[in-house]
Amino acid sequence: MNNMKILVLGKFYTEGFALHIKETLLDMGHQVFCYEVGSLIANNSKSHFLSIINKMRNVLYEVTDNLPSIRNKRIKSLFKLVAMKNPDIILVCYDFLLPSEVVYLKENFPETKIAMWFPDTLVNFGRSYFMNAPYDALFFKDPFIIHALFNVLKTPVYYMPECFNPQRHFLPDGIDIEDKYKCDITTAGTLHSWRVAYYQHLTKYDVKLWGPHPPLWMPKELVNNLHPNHVVYNQDKAKAFLGAKIVLNNLLYGEIWGVNVRTFEAAGIGAFQMVDWRPGLEQLFVDGKEIITYKNLADMHEKIEYYLANPKQRQVIAEAGKIRAFKEHTYRHRLELILATLANKAKGFNLPNV
Image (cartoon, rainbow, N blue to C red; front, side):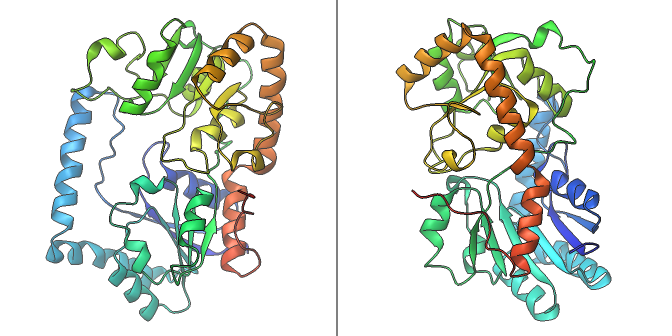
């Protein structure tokens, strides 16, 4: 399956899902063509002012995209690109295409396989265009989604956990970790309500949450002692995770049987990680040896106290988790499996017994 022509639809901003896919496919030797979907302004700016402007532009784009005349005009550029490049595979990141657009592609380019990889929870399904679109395959991160959709949709549905990019998420030898990254507990991501509520139980520790500015409506007293107002990407994320004694990965309630991308990034970087237990996690990492799980707040507090006092055990577990991540959980592993599945040589990632 070398030297295939693959068109990737997505948003190619820093640390963007589509960007990791593009870079990995190129590294695998494939010809890759990119089509930027949605607003060209990604909402990941370190500036609070620019972040607000970006959000406004994204909203404006989404509103106008619902107007058929504007949507049709925008999508014509995709059809022209497909006609010009004649790709073997179109890989759609997230649920960007309308059912009618997938129908058009299937009817006019019957030799091209069209697949969607949705790396988010079911609470973010939105309008779920994919449910009525004739894709050749759909890939989801949560085994529960496969369980729910398997006998309903006509399109084949497969399990495909998230992963990490070893070309981006690493710290080169000889690079020091600055003091600003050092703390007891950390994580990286949006300061949504669930994360802020969760971290209110950890105020006695030295905690740093890395990510964009909190929303304006969020009470400042809840985040002032937790948030450095700084987004970390790539090697900076590696510094943030390795500078902390514990990466505490509290999963959103929408993660039902699966886990988030941070699970794989923290492991691949080589950080010691504690994460909410999920039924599908045991298939991905060995609990107690490669990663530490907790099932409630009392269990979390007990394990935080124990592992803060035992740095050698943290190091052993972190190193084992890193080995497992490199062995099984990179973008290359996932994309090889997706391509094999589209070629009818595999059936996605093995589902856990839950």
